[in-house]
Image 1 (cartoon, rainbow, N blue to C red):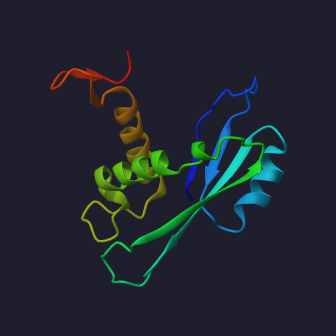
Image 2: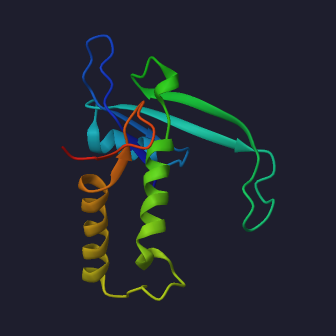
Amino acid sequence: MRINYFPISSAGEDRPQISTDGWASYPSTIDRAFRQSVRHGVLVKNYSNPESGRYAAPDLKRADRISMQGIRQLWTICTSHVERFSLSVRTFVKRLSRLALGFSKKLDNLCAAVSLHIAHYNCCWRLREPGKSGRLRVSCS
């Protein structure tokens, strides 16, 4: 499930925004869960050759942005933030890799490993300071 959540205050409106991909059950689920308390947008990506190969990325033909609930600026609909976060979690938490040695069948161990990684990512991960090449900073101050 790819849901991007980031609040944008536009025209005096403080409702958070949820951006999802084009899976058919997202709009009705978000409507039932949040009613009119969020703005919802859908990003549908169309590929020219979706079955190009098992490990090759398909070529993006176009991306359509659709406002489902109250989004006036379509350019704010994006899922790239949550896709990047999902990639980081899958890369660094080897318990999520099916063929890795760290794979665990015990749900408590998996929850603990993912929680530990997210806490480290949010509070200890060192980011580059904007405009200062090479200088690192801790993400939580």
